[in-house]
Length: 163
Image 1 (cartoon, rainbow, N blue to C red):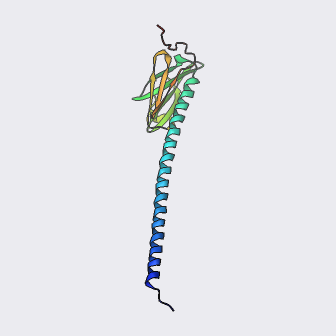
Image 2 (image 1 turned 90 degrees about the vertical axis):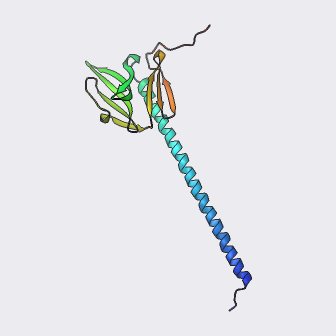
């Protein structure tokens, strides 16, 4: 049996170092790629939740009967949108509000005392605000996005003046 020469030992060590360097580079690349993918997936999910939240509220306002049955206000210290409906002799209200990181909806008789915990969580959100503007427009903000909604039956829209 032949003894390995110094040259062969050096070749083996060099090959092992080269392979180890390559394996470490592949591992680092995979870890960075996974981290980047996770970050992009989180951003996409947050954007989806924000758009879905705004679309949900926009549709609820558009499906309300008219501007006189919509108001923006405070529900136990929480900004809320109130959508009123009358069935027979009874007046009902649907409250839409942010609570514990979610958008909640609560439908009840107007005369009943309700608390935010009574509602149903609809979709996750970081924050949500409602603002009633001139001309009956309602601005709904969720996260970093917002939408302006003009309720049905609103004929008092705002026009720019011409000089």
